[in-house]
Image 1 (cartoon, rainbow, N blue to C red):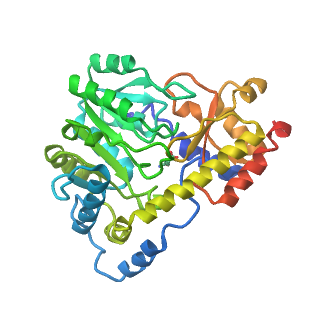
Image 2 (cartoon, rainbow, N blue to C red):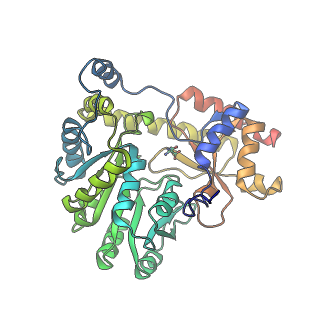
Image 3 (tube, rainbow, N blue to C red):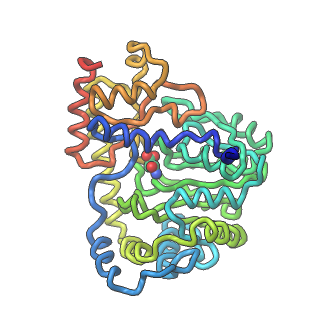
Length: 389
Ligand code: GLN
């Protein structure tokens, strides 16, 4: 038999998804793969039930149903403070994952360099490989996750064509400040670099931190491709609804890439979510309040157990420092530790090394998009870590 594709030969499975399987195997509370265990908003579910009996069962327009794109453009335009044209600047995708892949395929030629902040969401590495690009990494230094603008400039000077910017960041919870965003924007303009933003956690930001949209900074709309998602904002990760927002010339190309990748996102789901896209500010305020309470519950719990961690500024992940345990148990990798934690303590987390380019094996990522009872159960189990490991 001839060999399979060279391009994909180096792929491992996603460690995030693997940890879900390992959690299931040991009956652990699964705080690895980031998805909620509470219901999406009722009005969206009610609308979904109605849609089942309406005429939304065939393909929508490949780049997204008119109704969906109009509602999305209106919402995002108000949020971002820039006009968004629903016809020429928006493509509806199958989740933020497809949005990122379509953006990369649209921008990159084989051999192009793509700059990525490390730690990074693991899909970006695979996206780079699939689009033929070569990732170059700029460290976000724990525990504050700050970066050195010199290192970013080095990457741009070395010819990076694209920067992937996850803001708020998965896994480290960093929310880039206006000053940091301005530094990045100025360098992107100076070196003619495109910025692909992953903004799927845009509504999960903790006071006093604020969302700054790269596309809204002076001179940046024309070189920014926004990748967004409805998954986290409306707690429906299984619906696989995402989008890109980009200038018309770029969007024209994304539409074609997207058409050949997936034809389109699910038509009934696009229609049902329009209800959510029209929610008032109250909904988003409640979402922020809910996640703030969960973040605080988790941080306080970890503190009382004596586990060191960062305090996220946005998104719903915490990096917990387990280096003393890893050292004490004489383990080579945090991967082994994550499995042991599932088995002996009963809590599933993602090994930090799957996010870092650097050889860092000190952290595990825990997420808190779960009911309080689930979080309390995880904390209860973790409180016995000193005896069990
Ligand atoms: N974004 C989520 C995480 O980082 C879920 C990833 C996924 O499995 N699509 O855990």
